Image (tube, rainbow, N blue to C red; front, side, top):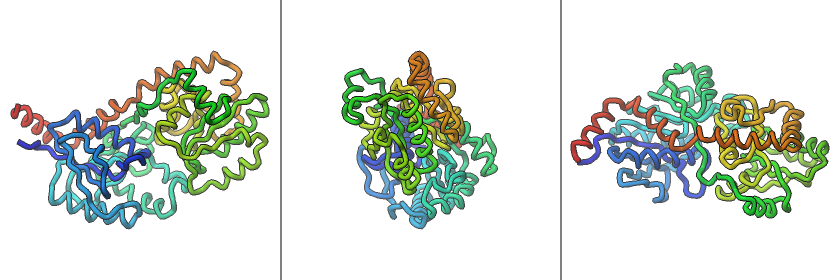
Length: 392
């Protein structure tokens, strides 16, 4: 007898070798949920040919729906026509979106994961055509769905205030950290340092490079740090250039110590974990984050963290990080100098970070997301479990 409970999932971001934020969240949570619940039939809705590695078990069926949706007009066609028609015909018990979207043209119960509302606070978060779409539709998505999951208490409160959503409709589902992040031994660290910084220690920044990430002030702070410390540490900037980078380019050109800044561009997940693991410290002084995964990844790698004391970073880092006002360049500089001069402080934050990162695992994330879904499907899930037990 086939499973009686059916869950459809928007899996547009499961792209082989191109997983970013939404894709990693979808991959890590869904592979656990599907394997832990063989009594449920999952339908993964793709917008293009998919890689078989994302079909996690016999209870997962792939469905490819046109068109390939990477533009607002195509988003509308995919969600409100292709997906809506599929949902009407197949009548799943739940439709789960892990990217903050929803289908407005359906009566099927829905859960969406709204990671953050950065686009509501910063115009430079995304391109203009995307910004207009998100600001128009996200409030409607939030009101349409039956429950919302989000990745921090900060983001939950932001959704409540911005979209006037009741707090009891929103579940906090923290992110986890990739299994690739771990404490490296000295020989591994030396190899990475020789590859990128000619053997020197370095501070590392991880993420895309655009104004919201505050890379401009980080560069200015590092320049001041170099002048005051007189040391030979470098700054490794790991990430792709975004669509607005002129301020960053101008800042680099004005730096006294610009030769000590290394831009790697995009690197693979495996290489990124090594770059973080070999660092002297992580500098993550973004102006806005819904969570801030690099903070946890650095802690898991035994690397001390300097991070912003605002938005979710205050919540995630707690006292395991050195927190600074990201608008105050001097505070960022002083945090670098503190770690440079006081090894006891550095070692203390390494240990605190290793303890703090235990609170953020993908196993916990998957369980919390599943709990959120069960709150919506409720009695139908119970009936499905009983039915599966009766078959045994």
